[in-house]
Image (cartoon, one colour):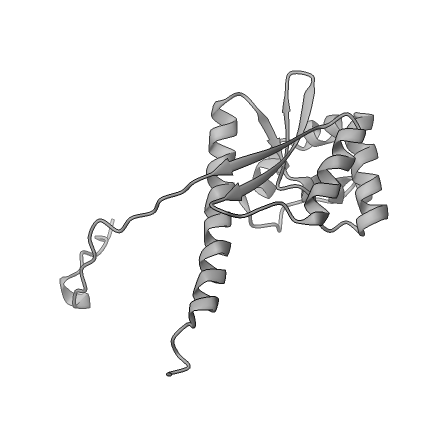
Length: 167
């Protein structure tokens, strides 16, 4: 077998990783539309540990929005449920295994894991969601079934593919 091709196991692992990444992006959109305010647990933890940190050199969307919403992050960290939970995660799990999303709606705070297809909660994820619950944070799993279909696939010579015109 040619080593350039993925084995079935490698393909399935990469597919699972990509579907998880897609699901998390979709989860942000779905939860936002349902009125949730979303926070990156990683950025909350970073802000808790280094209150003066700036996010300007971070590239992901949540990091960029955190620049604009820095005061929202500071306000959320003043909530003992959140700061206590994050401190205990750092102490107990060395900061790894944070939930995918921390969300707020009204006065309620949520720790949300996003799962797709047949994926399941790992033992660490279960323990972290239970820890969130002990801190007064509602633990949730957003399970998504995603079906991606290729409607059409055309292999074209580069010369025949449309290009952006100069402005």
